[in-house]
Amino acid sequence: MKIRIRDNSIRLRLERTEVDQLRATGVVKSHTAFPGGQRFSYAVESSPASVQPVALFSDLTITVRLPETVVLAWATTEQVSIEGEQVLDDGARLSLLVEKDFACLAPREGEDESDMFEHPGKSSLSC
Picture 1: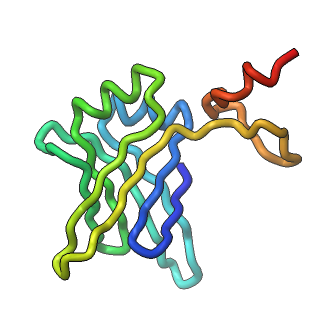
Picture 2 (picture 1 turned 180 degrees about the vertical axis):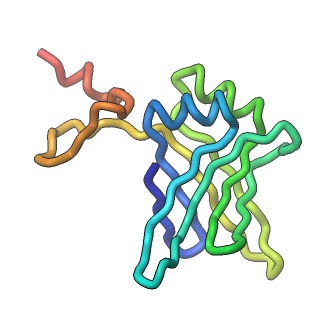
């Protein structure tokens, strides 16, 4: 799983296995280790109690919680992403985006893209 944070925006990209895991178990987690034993963690959860995407931050962990019905539809169709927006305490907005991770159109050295989704534009570039 990849995470991108920019200002008030969180974007998570999941590979095929992670999408399957989220559908089957309701959670996908990842982390980045730092010196001194600190870990920054991030997770995507599927919840039957959720009605819209929300983000939580606690104990150095970002958790994006998604409605279970939305996750099931996304995981079993060609739908690319799940988007949401959360109003913060100060009135600002936090944008949330969870996407399927596509293979690049041009191969990159050292990249393992075997578990990524086929890029939708790939077929139009084929001979």
